[in-house]
Image (tube, rainbow, N blue to C red):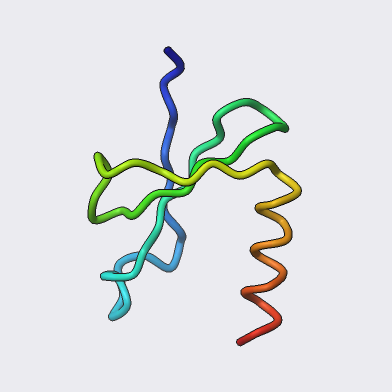
Length: 63
């Protein structure tokens, strides 16, 4: 079993800290895991790097 090193956004800790997610690299260059930082044992969403890139593009173009 691979240990995932989770990391939070550099924006964590402010007024919106209750809506923070954590990211973890499952395998270099292949998969990214996303989980709720308030519920780290609640599971995670697994995305390919292409899916993750698309998600970030969609988020940044809608703000």
